[in-house]
Image (tube, rainbow, N blue to C red; front, side):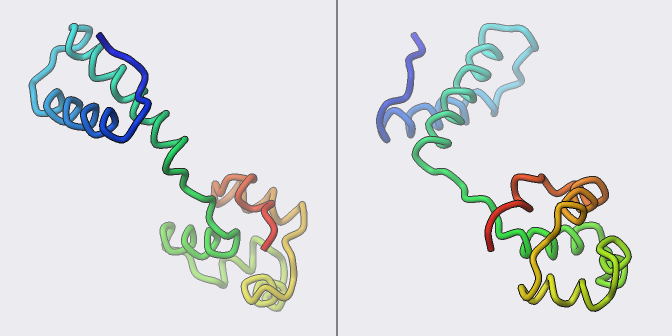
Amino acid sequence: MLKPIKNNQQYEDALARAYVLMQKNIKPDSKESDELEIFSILIKEYENEHYPVPKPNPLEAIKFRLEQMNMSEVELSEILGYRSRKSEILSGKRKLSLAMIRKLNELLHIPAEVLIQAY
């Protein structure tokens, strides 16, 4: 019977069982596929509670997303307005405005909750 994961040993056991299930050729909507799905949910909840991942710094998120999208800082200048404004923002001298956050969210798909953090 599946139960909530309450300690590290149960977590390790759940990871091991999920790994075994992932190595099989499981058919959709089978008992084993349901078991794997439930283990995945339980593992995710345990990890979210015991191993939270902090949100990235807004400036790091912007730089990382530019790199991911193979964009230059010149293209970022076009999004933010002026070239000097881009430099001030990336150096931390100027804060992002609400309009900038909206554009970065819309065009670069950076979550707003990351961009509105203090830095």
